[in-house]
Length: 519
Image 1 (tube, rainbow, N blue to C red):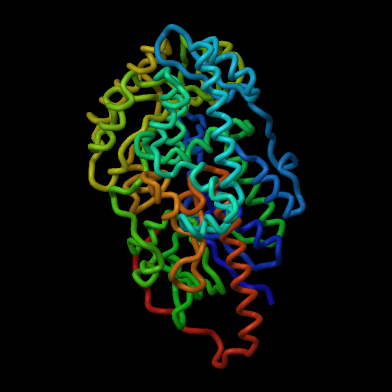
Image 2 (cartoon, rainbow, N blue to C red):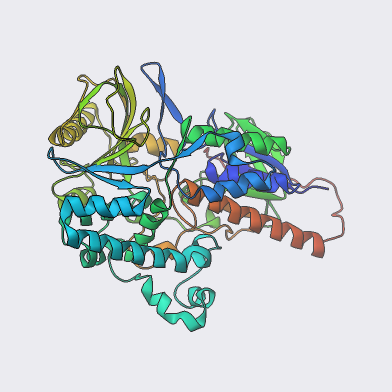
């Protein structure tokens, strides 16, 4: 008889977990409170036009190639994917811009033209170090189950390679080490920005996170229909293997029998039995009791001061003029120290860096488009959506600050701007108990990456997946968390079958008392 697994949440981690377990013969039910699958990979209508409101950068496509291949399909059969030749376009003022390319030699030439021969050599040394760090951690940490530092990680790396443990530079800040490669503060700022990919400050994250630059340098891909199309494709292949999806259904609590997760109760009062439960949500939801007070002991809570960044996100359908936009564009603040100091004290920066994803453009030269186009515009913000009310006046202040940054770099957006603004209040409502933190725990300090919640929890039969768990934030990392959760579930269920071969008398177990809360 197939083991029954309930997955709470149809984000990328939950979807990847569902495909893997369904393809291996388990009986899978995915329960999602929203009407769509994909979690943060969703679309919101603005001016009658659907606009991507979640992640926009797709890297490490091999992670998804493997998921689809395990299900007997290929990624290219299910979604239209093509490589981006320009990874991102960067500007500091109206005098020009700097592109990074899929071809590292072109990036090196562009950096040399922008900032001189020393900067080009610095980029070469930076790439070498980032690639080494990624190579050390790829299979020992990123694609493996959660591990502690230093001795357990050292055993995985190999005791004969003790130099590699120091080479990942966990005790030096990213900002400091970037100064060893780049004298030009603009380049230090550019490559320091990769820390924000996991919701963190370049001044507080370890230099280990240089590996993110290597991940992006391996290739950025464009998906027709955005990440929501990828999510729907994952749902489709999971359903081909028998997985059932119940969208628009909120889980009221995880239920337990004899100290082990035995299923979930949903808002209608229905109890869905399971041999294992996977929670694809921020672990803070579990710790706060949003899935029941008995489930709260499964994971450690994250203190508000340890949260990752949140964001102000403008979803716009508008005309633009001036700056030659590519698909991914970054417009930098003139004072990066002050920007993160503002966030640290709980304020949206008054002079922010701004990311603009021009969703209707390829990653090419930036030819002008006629008429309106779709934009996702992001400014980093504190994760205080549970304690601070972003009023209309505050939203207007932030919108003016965002526009000032763009106009300083010669990008003009239609005014008034047809848009919808998502604030930390909205992200808190979407992911309760997080304050609107988009990436879970911030990667601040040498130990932070080792403190993320792993697949197993303190309660037997209850597991975690998603971008707020190990190995970290981002679409491919969330999918890797789903792989790790699926592996742990399969391993534990196989162990139960080996060592508990007798039937339990008395028929169906009684569920525990309802514990309240919704998610």
